[in-house]
Structure formats: C-alpha cells, structure tokens
Length: 424
Ligand SMILES: Cc1cc2nc3c(=O)[nH]c(=O)nc-3n(C[C@H](O)[C@H](O)[C@H](O)COP(=O)(O)OP(=O)(O)OC[C@H]3O[C@@H](n4cnc5c(N)ncnc54)[C@H](O)[C@@H]3O)c2cc1C
Ligand code: SF4
Ligand code: SF4
Image 1: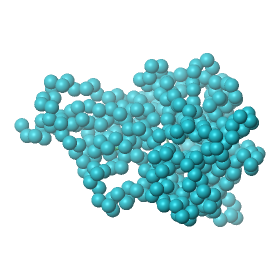
Image 2 (image 1 turned 135 degrees about the horizontal axis):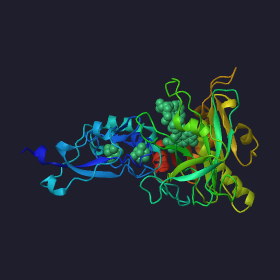
Image 3 (image 1 turned 90 degrees about the vertical axis):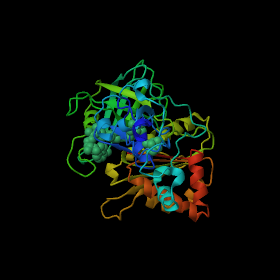
Image 4 (image 1 turned 90 degrees about the horizontal axis):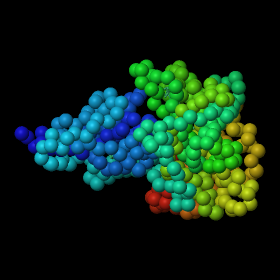
C-alpha cells in the first residue's frame, strides 16, 4: 500500500445544519479554499492549508468541524455540496496507522508566500477587518436559538412593518419590528438574527435561514420592550440584475402585524460598538447596511438623553442611489448636528455628479486622519460587498494625507479591533 493510501487527513468541513450562509469564511480564506452553491458552503481539501483564519470570524461555529479520513477518501466538493448534515466520524480502527499527512495545498501556506503574493493579499480589504470586538464592548450572546442549539428556533410576533423608502419606486425597504414576548432574546447593536421563511425550496428542503442585522438598540426598538427591528430590502433582481423574487426578503416585507416568524440566533461577536466614555464611532454604509448604524446611533442617543454618558464623535457616511432610496432619510435629518455629523452620497441624483461614500470620505480626509490616529475611534463598514475596497483605500489615503504610516495604522485598526467590516 502506498504512503498516499495510508496517510490520514484531518479534513476541515462546514456543518450544513448550522451554517447560515453568511459568506464570512469565503471572504476571509486567504487561499480561496471555501466555496458555495445555492445551499451549502464547503471547504476544498486540496486547497485548505489549515491556517485557521476562518475559524474566529464564523458567527455560528459551523466552520469549526473536522473529520479524520484516509487521504484517498477525503470528501470532495461534490459530496459536501450534497450534504444536509455532516457525516458521522469514521471508526478509528477503520483508519489504520495514524500516519497524519501535512495539509495538501495547491496554494502556498501563508509562511511560504512570496512577496508579490503577500502584497496582493495585503490589498484584500477583508484582511484589514478586526475579528475581535472593541475592548469595551458589552458581552454578546450568540447562537441561543437554532439548529443544534439547546433550544431550536423561536417564534416572534410582528409588531410593526413600515416601508422606509419612498412609495412608488422599485427600491422597497421595510422597517420591521419583531416582538419576542417572554422569550429571552438579548441582542447588541451590530449583531444579526436569522429568519427561517416558511415552506420549502425547489429541492423540497426547508429554506435555509437568511441573516438580518438588528437595527434597534440593546434595550429594544421601544425602550424596555423585548423586541428588535430589522431593515429589509425586498430583493426583486439578483446581483446581475435578472428578475428574481428573493425568498426571505419578500416574505418579510409582506408580513402583517400579528404574523408569526421563526427566528434563530443571535449571531456576531465582533461587529460591536465601544462602550467607554469618549469613544468615537465612524459609520460607513450603503442601503440596508444602515441597520447596525441606526442601532448604534440610537443607543448613543438614548445614553446622551440619560445625561450619564459622555461619548466621543459620531460620524456617518451613508450612500444610496437617490435620497428616495435611502432608508431613514427623514429621521436622520432630525438628529442634532452636535450629536452626529452626517454625510450623504447619492450616485444617481438627477442633475448631480455621481458621488459615492468614498468620495465623501476623501472630502473629510482631515477629520478622518485625526480619528485614525485616535485609539478611541472605531470604524464600522456595512452594506454592499463592492464598497469595501473603495472604503479601505479612502481610509488609507486619509491616513497618508495626515502623515501617518498606513502599515502601522492598518495593523493597529485590526489588532485593536478598531475596524469592522460586514458586507454581503
Ligand atoms: C451578516 C449579514 C447581515 C445582513 N443584513 C441584512 C439587512 O440588514 N437587510 C437586508 O435586507 N439584508 C441583509 N442581509 C442579506 C440577507 O441575509 C439576504 O441575503 C437577502 O435578504 C436576500 O435573501 P432572499 O431570501 O430574499 O433572497 P434569495 O432567495 O436568497 O436570493 C435570490 C437571488 O437574489 C440574489 N440576492 C440575494 N441578496 C441580494 C441582494 N441584496 N441584492 C441583489 N440580489 C441579491 C441571490 O444571489 C439569488 O440569486 C444580510 C446578510 C448578512 C450575511
Ligand atoms: S483554515 Fe485557512 S485555508 Fe482552510 S478554509 Fe479556513 S481560512 Fe481557508
Ligand atoms: S456561518 Fe460560518 S461556515 Fe457558514 S458561511 Fe458563515 S462563516 Fe462560513
């Protein structure tokens, strides 16, 4: 028997029963080992070098699964894509001599990368994002409800559903309030929840949960109530612009007050706001990426109203195609300018040149430079995946214009948990 046949592989697998298809692992993996189809996220055994970069960012822990298998029997991508649950571990006796093989990689392990590859990786925006919460963040509860949790999904009641973008436009975004009644559901600003739409998909399987950021502060959409709000955009075209009816977003936008909804979660333990006095928050978002920013802003507004907390600066960069498509445009304008510094960018406003959030950031480079140099300033980016690169480049340019070294600023932003990226 050849060495390749006896060698054992500790194979990295994703649990399809718990995975909420958030794409974090695929975006994080430096060697492109994670891929997905409509249903499952999977790890390519020929690419994964076990660098563990994907483990901490996974909000559910579903990425942290391992099976010892003979190398020649490693589960290939086709097998993993067909799973509804993980296979049971193989009997150790069936595995033969414990002859563990080093990870098989098509891509070089991180330690052996040549400098041009390193330089290319250094440009990946996701690499700049922190995987830990700010030191002063409150402790987040995660995975209280859902598959394989002690308690399965819970039922919430719809307490409100209002459209927050102008009626008559194709862009339809709703502010939806879900009430948990007597069921404990602690959430923090920046966390998300999973919604399980009723019915089954084309293959007859229960719909997989979709994730939505919580748009309300920790003490409820209505203070003192056990409820949360969501900002949901109705998906009527896919990312390529082809007509499609997104399963869960359409289900949510059509809900009536009193309807019941299956919820899992909460998820997320790093995209959390700082809680120490004097801490500043820079929020950069597009579309429904405004949800966590609304939650953080409202929590700081409530703290300010209590007179018991002295925060630092709040700076918001918010992009949309037009002001009619911008969720919460009206209420945002009512916030006092000594509380929050708001900057809007519209890319399709009639008769106006196109402006994106990164253009606004460049205009405010001097202020951003000061905040980048301030260890008490935290940066949050949420919205379309395509915004990440432009935003990180705008931050880099602001740092350079302020005479700062981008290498030390960017490594500090990550190691001190000061830059948080959440895009989808
Ligand atoms: C961490 C996290 C937080 C999120 N927070 C929010 C939030 O606050 N509000 C919100 O509305 N969504 C949010 N999402 C996206 C959300 O989870 C769903 O992906 C989205 O609502 C589409 O689900 P669907 O079931 O309606 O569409 P699906 O039935 O899953 O998809 C239908 C088709 O549309 C494509 N598609 C999916 N989403 C979009 C989109 N946004 N634009 C264009 N095409 C799309 C899919 O690729 C597919 O081809 C978040 C995602 C993540 C990972
Ligand atoms: S362990 Fe590393 S190489 Fe493997 S999937 Fe995770 S990030 Fe990619
Ligand atoms: S839940 Fe974890 S395993 Fe699933 S897509 Fe998100 S990061 Fe990957």
